[in-house]
Structures are given as C-alpha cells and as structure tokens.
Length: 399
Image (cartoon, rainbow, N blue to C red; front, side, top):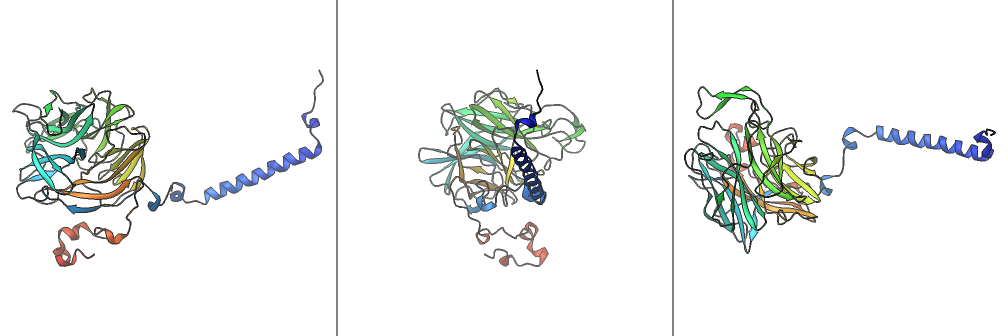
C-alpha cells in the first residue's frame, strides 16, 4: 500500500486557515492567562458581595418576658425552637449554682404564643441518681422531632468524672413529656490518651499524653434528619487541647433516631466552632460556626453533610443560638432557613435568654444599614468597663 502525506489531503488555503486559527487561539489563551494573573488572590476566590449573599445576615436583639435576667437563676443554651399547635417550645439549661451556670443543672422548657413572652413550665430532664453517668449535670440540649416522637439530646457529666462529657438522649410522645431517658449515652469520647487527677482542683484532670481530637469531651449535640439519615453533629475536645480555643465539630450518623450513631471517618468535619448550629439549606446543610478556631464567626455550607465550605463571615453572632427552623425535621428538598430564635447572654452574674432576629431565610430582604446595629464600632472592653476609659455609661448607647 502506498503511503500518503496528510498535508496533500488539504488545499494550501485550508492549511493556511488552520495555521492562522491556531495562532489566534494562542493569542486568546495568552490574554486569558494574563487576565487571570492580574486578579488578586482575594478576587480570585471572591464569589459575591455581602448584599447579594443569601448566607450573610446581621443580628438584632430584644429582651424576653419570662426568660430574661433573674437573680438566682441561670438560663442558657436554648435548643432549636419548634411549634406544636399554637405554641412555640424551647428547652434550655437551668441552674441555680452561683459559680458555674452549666453545672448542677437540669433541662427545663418554656412555651410561647409569639416568641417574645414565654411561660416557664418545669423540668423536662433531671440529673440522674448518685452514681449514674449524669448525676452532676444534664445540659446544653437540643430537640429532634422524628417518626412521631420527640427526642432531647444533651450532654451529661458525672460527679468526680473529671469533666469528661458524654451525649445522652431522652424521648417522649409529647413535647410536654414525660421524658424517658435512654439507659446509656448515645455518643462517648474516644477515650484514648492518658490523664491523671489534678493535684489541686477537684473533678479536674491533667493531660499526661494527648489523645484524639475527641478524647476528652463530646458535647453540644444537634441531630438533623438529612439525606434519609439522622446526622448527629457535636463539638469535641481532646486531651491536651486548650479547652476554649481548640474545639472542632464531628458528626455521627444513624438510620434511626435512637441510633446506633457511628462516627464519621472524616471527623473532625470543621476546624473551628463552639456551639453547634445546623439547618437544612437548599439541597444541603448550612451551619453557623461561632467562636473558636481559624474559621470562627462564619456561615458554612455542605452538599453532603461532611465537607463544609465558608460562605460568609458574621458579626455579633448569637451566643448558643437556637433558631425557629420550620422545616428542620422535614428533610426538605429545598431548605428555607430561618429569621429568628433565642440565644443566651452569659457574661453577667446570672445568665439569661434573649431573642434575636435575622435574615437567613430564602427571599428575605437584608438589613445592612449600620445604624440599625448598636454593636457596630463598639469595643467589648469599653462596654464592660467604661470607667477605665473615662467614658460615662450614659454615652455608650448612642444610636
């Protein structure tokens, strides 16, 4: 068979045309590369302005009736809020300990018709009997509505348990109870590393050998039905961590509300965050990752419940926020978000609850005018001790 030179198959004009096209594409590619190189690193990762970002918002606050400041009583760490019939329900940590607002605590609940005036009811879940794993405190609770029942997840601590926390659960047929505790915790630390009792402080430990990221505490639980599973998000500390700076989140997944919950091999799934706050957003899961860690005060989003990406940075995040998320337990195809909830103020002698309002619901118009937000341009040290800066207290709240 004779061989052919492929160039003989084309006319000289076609060869010239293809050559010219090739040179033009090289010029275009060169120009595109040059334009990319001219973008700063910030603009290369820029997705949108705050005013166009559905996952950016600001927060305003107002006092509550019935759950506000009360001398002699701590109320803190409110759960997500649910609505049953005409009433909103919230659960929270309640303690009368003058030193530590989250210990020697029980879980109480309150109801409201409007989200502002609340009627405190009574204890939903109490500490266990002496010797049980929850005999010191039950606290930092969250609510799950699933399969016709109500579930409270919460952290628990034992007397002389050296601050090791576990996650427990109680269930009921009504939001008013009665609540039945499950016999064992549904999530525990990894229990690796080495520690010994603190030589001076009762019920505290000293790390001998650091452990896994969740070797000391698992706490702040929140369960969300998503992708036809139950996702238990939680905060953890490891032996050797700086307790209030190094917390991260993990997730454990189950087929049923009561478990068993299996920790993800990808844990930790955040590098930051203290209180756990998650909700269904569009087709995935959104989260407010509050203080602690390099990505503190951010809203993050995940398509799969594991891999989260920062979508916005927030100011004045509600401490331990619990929102009213109407579709939180529906596993919706298009999660809608929320516009209000409760949080706690924990820097006074007695902790108390407040209401926050925001614009993290689809279709809401953002409130971005700085004059609407008294915290803008404030400095916490000045607010706490104005006298040290020679500022009259009456001048602090200029609007």
